[in-house]
Image (cartoon, rainbow, N blue to C red):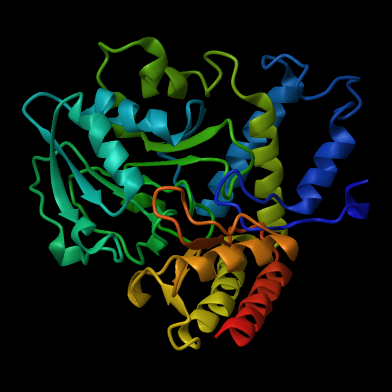
Length: 365
């Protein structure tokens, strides 16, 4: 049984920790889902049993995030990386340019895909400072003829996060929220489209959530392949083809779990406390731990830091593994250390990391 297993202190950046209660419920239902004699993975996606699971997951997200009725909730495949292409395919028209705010590697990748499909411009960038901060709203430069403005709300590799969002008026605001969706309350009506790979805060990998305003669905280009049109999926309730049924089932269980925790507001308060435990150690270390992000741009989801030398970092990571910590290595492209404290990561794991970091400094400072 799962409760008898020794659970890792999992700080992986994605796929990441899932709530134990969700894993246990999935375990109980994996062979026989609600008396059907079948796993959710075995039944038709056209069956009423599965359709109920599908629709309930959408309803829970609408409730938890306060998603207005004039937005479609889509479950797609291909990860956030496919959205990098689908967005310009659908919305980057001739005679317009799409604006991208560069705050890290994933926004760079999104821009690169759009450049293959039409005109783009950089509305702001913090690359020159190695992405240590989020640009202020008054740094953003775009005009009202822009096809859309794209932002990445949380940057997993560099550990930065937007604390407020631009009011773009008639320019559609599009956001990659893969790594901080459901972690704090947001005003969905500020955005024309939100997308997120599930494997951070929503569930296992394999399903991508898209929240899209109705008028944007209608505005989409029609001379592109059927599966790459948002209108195809909106008109068919994400059931045009076989969806990732198990991933959607798991997403629904995670959404139920968030509701049981008290909703997004309660989750946010817990996330603040979890991140503060670790940031406090960094700030009190007199430079032993060196945080990457500027304080006013720090992420609640991905805490990035380095130690004074590579030798110390290597020792820190080796000893952390011996103590049962998983996933504290920084992204392979930048190195260093990273603790990803997504919604399901227990407070107890963050307390344990705090204590380990303090003890490591005492021994090696």
